[in-house]
Structure formats: C-alpha cells, structure tokens
Length: 127
Image (cartoon, rainbow, N blue to C red; front, side):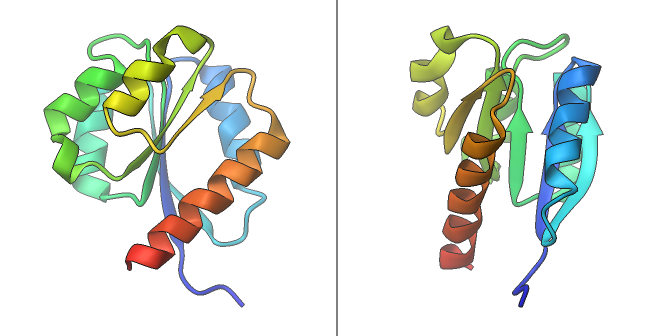
C-alpha cells in the first residue's frame, strides 16, 4: 500500500541525463515528478513553487550551479538533495551543503533505487 506520493524535481542541463532519471522515476509507483529544469535559475523557481520532497540536482549547470541553487533557496528551505554529476570531485562540497546523497553519472539503477528508498524513508520519518 502506498502511504503518500513522493514529489520529485529533476534538475540537469543535459537532456539525456534528465531523461534517464525520468525513466527510472516513472517506474516507481509512489513517485510524482513535479518538474524538470535545465538550469539553476529554473531550479530555484521550481523549488519555491513546487516544494518537492526531493531534488535530483546536477552540480555543473548554466546560470547557477547546484551549490548556488541551494544558497539561493536557502539551506533551511531546501528539500532533500541528491546530487547527480559526472564528477566525484564535488562530493565533499555536496555533503557540506547538506546533500542527502551523491550519485555519479551514468546513474546505476541499483544504486539509484537504494538511494531513493533511503530518501523516501527519511521523508516519511520526518512527516
């Protein structure tokens, strides 16, 4: 039985990366994708408007990078963040910015589902 809908926002400037996440997320019954953004400015507006439970957030993007998005929204107002990037160089910074998790591209589906399950449990525990 599904307790609640888990609202997710996808933020990545790469179309293929967004599509991969959409494909993975649409297979999860309690997930609702509330939006897709291709840059940091769109992300800030969508986070404020949609108030998702979870954001899959790329690090390197035009306009504002992933860290700038968190700063602009405000760390205390950010939903859970899973950084998704091709570079492991940003991992320490990601966790310093309060990231819940860090996935490397291309996203492995097993690790993706494990991370999503952990995020869902954390959200349900704080609800």
